[in-house]
Length: 352
Image (tube, rainbow, N blue to C red; front, side, top):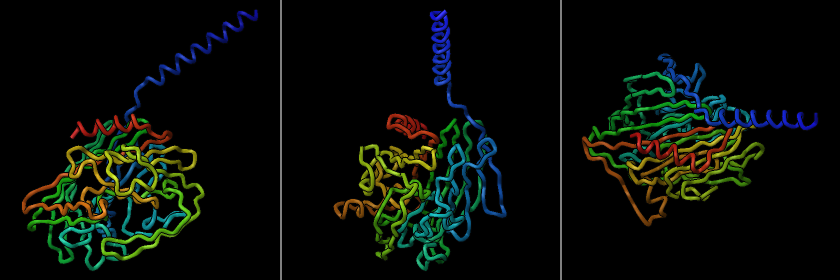
């Protein structure tokens, strides 16, 4: 009887193991991506199986279109709430860092990056004005959006026209956002003078910041100091690692094909990755990634990142264009391995 009992238990274990292996081999389920327009609120919600993933939003007081907020597959906010919907325990600095955006700190001398940092339009601030949604395409596993915007100086003159193509992906516990943006110089030549203040940025939730015990004093594009105050590190779990093996605060100013900001919010492990594209300017890009929650790829700010050893000062001739491509990868429940990130990044590189 004992031998028979052991055999039955062993058979049950083998069956459960086989079922587990079969389940592990099942492909991640694609979810339905849909859109809901809220014209009066100047917003388009991006939904996955009816739940909010992010929203494309163009409020007048932010001076640029943004994706805000952004959530994991479990519905956890990975973007900072302040200044739109502040949450307890957040930093309340850099009013202009909202959700996810693409702009720059010195475009023909105008500051598109820092506009709104004073709680109102800065005197020298450029604005990216949303013009319209050209196309929305819903689908299983992927939805896409094409829209147009205008980069205007303080006098209202257009410097650049922008056409942006978003692709929103939902596959199991993975969410991804691809952004392909084409900027065309419409008001004469446009100079992107070197500055660290750019370009494809995210401001993340407090829990994904890097723990810090000290105040940090930073300078903006005009040399004005800003002090980022030290705060309690309770629940703060973030850390950077790059495709080149650099980690922590040391990633700032380095070049890499991708950057992973990983940590936990509550019991949920998260990886938040930005991938560069081989066709992009300055590939592999420089990283303006700070421990206090600013996570940004900047192909333009060469002089600042090389401490004056090199300089770019990129120019778009009148009538000519520049296209930039970036991917955001968000995992929920797991921290992605380098091999997994390499796979998603290689797929991105081959897609566009």
